[in-house]
Image (cartoon, rainbow, N blue to C red; front, side):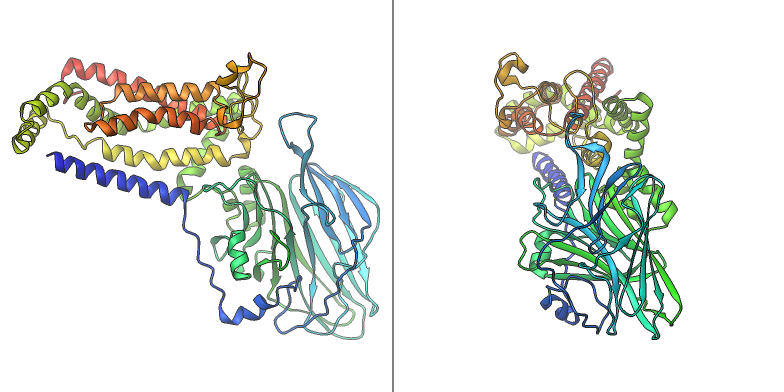
Length: 563
């Protein structure tokens, strides 16, 4: 019986380890570069996407030039460099660097002469010899400043009297609609295709979270593709062809993405910018070539998203713009089917109570109610084992020299009391994806960023600011981060310790000692986690203790095998 129990425990813990490993270390798609793409890989200095077979002349500016127009819209403000009609200065008006209202606003896109340039350009490519606007072209604007609701109008005309017009509309949130038009006032037919690219230079994420992707990504043919900086440094260039998709670069809470009209088939590309450390480019070019006869004109629509990854807003863009799976820009992970519903539950609860922390507490309660039958079955098994601990110990002591008889007597005891020692394992395994999904929601939700709770918690996305080692602020000393064990992590550790005390101890003394250390280990570990997640774990522990204590009391009155 003991061997069977050890086997069951080994299987359970093996499955648990595999689940945790798959969740925290998801396998990435292997990005092999086909042989027909080798010409692109070896030609990494080409910045602008090109039509297959074309060899356009690339002009390289010797110095950074700028001539700017400014805009101040509903939720974004900034400027556009008329050289190249470059989007390189976008500020989010509703988000700041920290909770201090006097701190800087989030500066998403940054100019080319900054420490970490982050910019977008759009343009035209052609298979024929044609003077097209490029990154050094100085566009003209009809005014110097634009306010909310106004369209930004830019234009440029080449020596052949071919006029390029760009109209930019910024909605009430973070979408830039760009309409590029060409008026062919020349005497010859022209063939063109439009493109767009995002460049980000001299940047790597400061914090590498295994459960969150930060970097290049996109959706192609209904499938999300995430590409790391290491992938690009190794492979050079990765390409995709799709219809109705998007490509961009994501951060923890922010994203910049570009995409054409949903009916356009396009070729997308992820590339490492050669000789520039930690620098990447993502781009696309439409596959359809537009033919424009003399005295005729054509236009193409493109879109830019530059803003915060607010799930309800992104879902509204899916509905309005019909762009495929744009919500996958929020990294809800493999348990997406659980994570997104949990997010909306938390979102509505937080809005209802007017406090994100209270929303976390009530969501934890509702999850516990839904999982009540499973948890009850698990707790019933554990409590029954706890009640029988004295009898089990007595059997072990009595037959310690006869293992076969010991197992027979223990099996007879379990049968008499109608107890299955492994009955609590399956309910726990079923609950694991739900708890991981809830953890993921709390980690990725921008709604938790700078959200206040009560008392000293002014930002649920940051660690508890108090510390045991300066008596929670009574001693004028700022301890190092490793010693920043706040009040909520201590409460979490205490509740975890109480939860272990109410559970039956493992039969192996070494296992028992390891389990007794876990509350202390998790206290130090979770002290560096966002306070919102620590609040969740603490409330969950309290609910587990309460449910288990009530069930244990009933089982003591009615017998181990009954409720």
